[in-house]
Length: 304
Image (tube, rainbow, N blue to C red):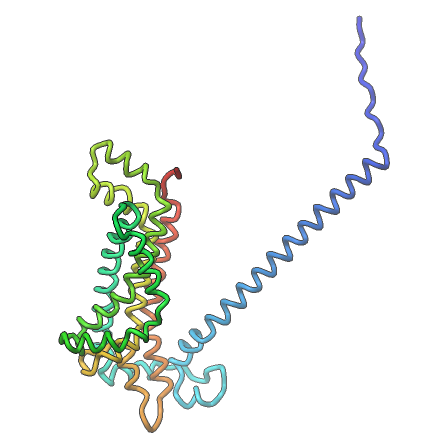
């Protein structure tokens, strides 16, 4: 009968023990560095959020405070009421201005999204003479300040009879939003493999069918971002509307808010309430767009 015996493990020497302690110290050191880095980043993010949200929170709180309470210097309200909102809507300037802003912003967002999608698809998928020049022209246009072209734009609109009309304001907002949207969507389209469209065409799908069935579903996050950007840009735009609109019935919300700043004083509570009226729809829209954007981030195809 053969007996197999196992040799006892060799005792760990001092070199092995020192090496294990060294590796453990390095692991703890790296973990400590990662924790400090995470804490530093989180602190910076919280500080940035506080700095960004502080004026907005103050506006919402001030809209519920009387005018004298706001001017008292006390950062905390002594009395909360909705009198500012009641007084604001009693002025009768909000409903029409809200409707004008909603119409201009909605139409601008839809047209910008549709036009920029088709233009970006053409620049991304088709080769034609002047393609590079067109892309460079869009990029160069973003380097020119908007105020530089404001005076020629206003003069041209007045000669065409588009001044003091919501149509003229909408067209002006389109000139501001379409170039940026085209550049954004073109960059996003370049990440979508052309092989997906080619496979769909081989299976009998037309070019338009491939666009609507393959490309647009993958483009939904970018489309949501472009739509939100175009709506917010048009909703809060002030300078172009101020240069074109003179009639009270055609004023948008930023122009209507200007009428609250009177010569002999300003009711800060009513002004803050107007700010809430302007910002609240945008905040609600952003929450919906953000949910759609995050839910579609994982939608995509294989890379080439």
